[in-house]
Image 1 (cartoon, rainbow, N blue to C red):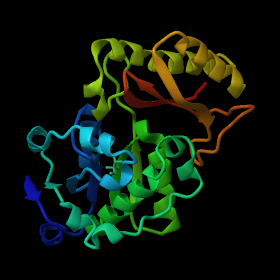
Image 2 (cartoon, rainbow, N blue to C red; image 1 turned 120 degrees about the vertical axis):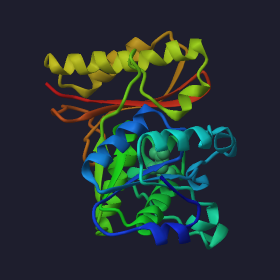
Image 3 (cartoon, rainbow, N blue to C red; image 1 turned 60 degrees about the vertical axis):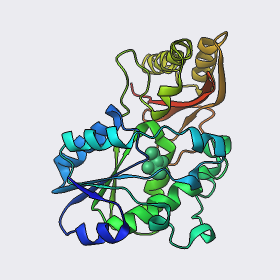
Image 4 (tube, rainbow, N blue to C red; image 1 turned 45 degrees about the vertical axis):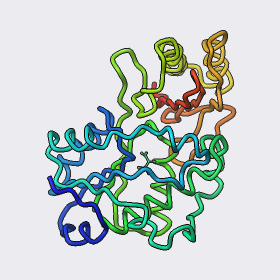
Length: 277
Ligand code: PAF
């Protein structure tokens, strides 16, 4: 595996043919591994980027605490037989320094996770755009755990007519259902137990949908009811159109997505589930 530590080394490495990019902020887990496995099946060359993007953090403390495990990440990528890992420095991604002009994630970028973390999606799209320009992949892989991020990345690529296909990959869970996230390392045992309720509540709502419940408000009441009494501070919980992320307040169709974010034991967690009958 090649370790590319500058944009110059990346340019010298990038080649034609099918190239899959898996953009990450490191602290890799089985969710990332599943994106990489999918990228390997669909491309001749797979590049994983590791860059903790300061632009997408609205709180300096959150950025400071973001887990960084680069040595272990590189070992994992070696084992997964990735062709190259791109480890840019800030100046490789943002040569203009603090003058960087952020892309706008628009109205969708201001809702849900964007409302909970103002500016997050502008920063996320800015870095994804730069990575796509530098790597020029044919495919880029994003997990469905960050469903709003995936929706915005797809919209950006369509709007800017970028020659890359955005591939959404299944959310990966621990055996007991907790959605994998780099932030899970910060959960105490008690908080982790509480966090499981998010999965359990979404599962119940998805079961109700499968059994015929079509009213968004009833699905959401079920979720809130199941979280009641637990030490969980819900930031948002909604049913959305999976393609546009528009909120659905009345009747819900098959293929809509129920999304939730909550603070559990001081950790901001996201989860979601597709509603299918
Ligand atoms: O999902 C992430 O890890 C990040 O938001 C991404 C896509 C790598 C951009 O920094």
